[in-house]
Image (cartoon, rainbow over all chains, first blue to last red; front, side):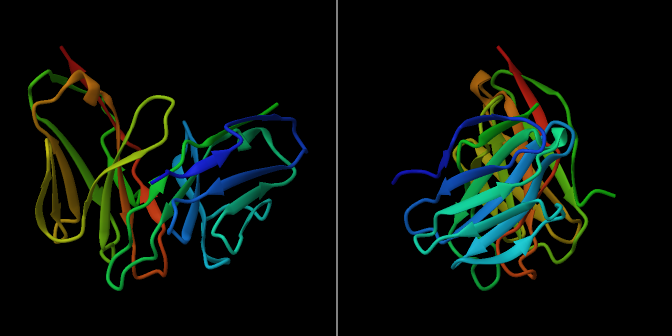
Length: 116
Length: 113
């Protein structure tokens, strides 16, 4: 089974621009979560989508947004880029959570965004 | 207090020895616990999941969970140089709908030949 794929793998943008990142989950996985990883803050949850609906959101400003399509593919968008947005953006897919526990999440290779 | 805490290391382990990694979490409603391995420049790779108190073994890895003490650990037996990586503890508070992982800062492990 193919893993989670993310495109592009690398991006260089300048302050003020916007960026869109794409994620294709493992076949059969309908939950997609996005995380930001930086050396200073570690891995932080951005948001989760399931059945085209945002189900959870982390503590990030409104410049960070996302969406999910009917085929479970997801995109995240960052507008008005700031230097501090430079990070590795990771997408993870999973089956829906079970009744009494969350489910295993599998990460894609990530998109490394550099903001100049 | 951070929600999920790990010693940042580095944890230096001789080849063939047991590496012991610890993780504590603050929220008692946490129900799902995961260990990820992350090599430098790569994305996290799931190596263990544990949901009930006690031990869970998978190959050279053993995860241990103690919900009363809010503590989860990972043992790596017969450590190999290829085990040198950062190990991330992650917790899912399932009472909140959905899959939302909170990560610790990671423990860097160095296995010396």
